[in-house]
Amino acid sequence: MKAGRKILYRNFMTFLSLAGVLAIVLPIFLSSGSWPDTARNYLEQNGFIETGARNLVSAIYLGYRAFDTLGETIVLLVAVSGTIGIISHSGISLARGYGREEESQSSKKSLLQIKRTELLDVVTGKMGPIVLIFGLYVMLYGHLSPGGGFQGGVVIASGIVFLALGSKNDSSIRLQEAPVLARIEASGFLMLIIASLIGIPGGAGFFGNPLSSSEEFKVGYIIILNSIIGLKVGAGIGYMCVAMLGREAT
Image (spheres, helix red, strand yellow):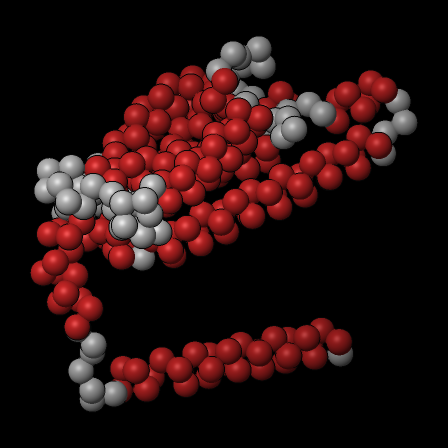
């Protein structure tokens, strides 16, 4: 009887959710009015001229909507802090639950020390540097081609995870250590704040491009922001993944 009520309640909530989505979306598609195109036309005509970035996506989120980008990096910072706090607390609670010292030490072992294969070591260890280089390319050339700081940062994080999966227990690769990634992530956020302020003395304003007067170098500001965001995103997501793999997060 209870199972039947649960199924009925689930079906009712599904129907209610679909009805709400249709009530919001259908009027948009059935409307006979034209889509707003003022902002689109302006960005298409002036995006490259004003920012120097041929990739208009980079021109928008690092030129016209940099405030949104700052908000997104803050969200990532909070997510990293919360995830690491949860993981650290869970690890401490697990360690306290064991009565013997040897069991407490075994609870701190990395998950990678428990389940490893030679194929995993070889493939991920070789792919890690390649993925890191590709991530740097996506990050540094985001003003010219599809990519940018966020996309390149995610690829870099994937390379960090590959290095962590393919490294032995006595590996000396600093990039896969959680404390190092935490410092890079914090430094990236600090550099982003500094980059947002350097345009104020010259009159460009908060997140203003201090190189906007130079036709040749004004795109350099977007490259700098992409690099900072890429390092921050890569270190932040890599930090969370490495911690969840069982590495020390403190």
